[in-house]
Length: 420
Image (tube, rainbow, N blue to C red; front, side, top):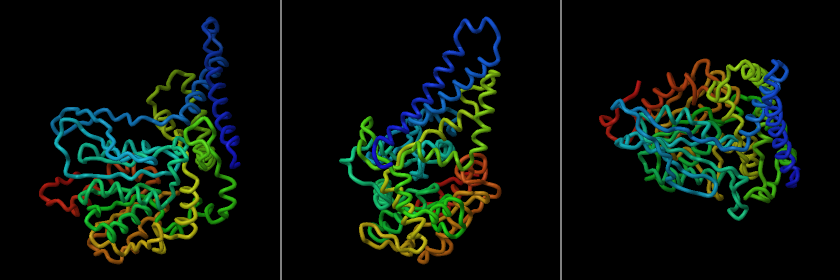
């Protein structure tokens, strides 16, 4: 599977499915057929429309689609997406709200590199924009990065986070969502030792696998069952000649998507079946709940092979973060060096990816941090997605995170207004 023809074969299958959907929609929508009502043709057109849209989204990076934000003056202010730092494997971008004074709360959202684009956190960004200056890591699709740019593994990811935090300064408040939580914790410890003046003001870890063995899930069980050789053989492919990253070893987004869907195959099958009938009845729209969710969920990106394999081996199998034995370029990173950064963990009661216990384990590693600077929250009834998006995030977790930032920010507390 590590030869590029297998990568091109997956893209050929995807392209064929998209073509079949488009063809079915065109054929069933032929004007002459409208002279006689035919439910079979209506269903064929609906199937074609849903199929074409689904397979088309798999190779397109979603747009941020954040055009304006309502501010305290009662007016909508335009939002522009600007690159603060541009790097080969990922950029640091800033959502600048025009004609508005800069907010004192400066927030860096560290997006996961786990198959989806950073736009997965769109609703998180929207919820923070009225009260914060929001920055986010925008990771690139590995298939579009030339081999000449070199490797990118967990250590490189961590150093990217270090550079982004140094760029934003010590008044930044970092929020790491899911996969990057252990690496951002390591990046903060690295800064505490090497560049203490660049440490962030606060660090919030949301649903991350700090200690995957604290509460085993299907994800951690899979990592323990499969050897690294088997994983490499099953998962790694070589980017084909169609893309800039020709020759780069990757874990393809399409292969990742297959794994995502197989975990909840019944639910996804039911969702698409119901959507076909909604389209046939004329009840579906571009912005209906199904399309809003799946337009983002189906948009996947390739990860570099070395990042995926080193994540599985070092974070899940060897538990280097949980054992406090992570190294960067041979330099040991001691999480106990963090003494001046307030840390909060957030977990979901029904999280089946990073189960309760995995993220809060970070607080035990912070041996040098005063107990007053540690906090944790377990959100009742919330799943993995709900702890950073949806009603649980908006109504419960977001206010708590902003309150935590206000209580521990390095700026004078009087300058910050708590959000409830």
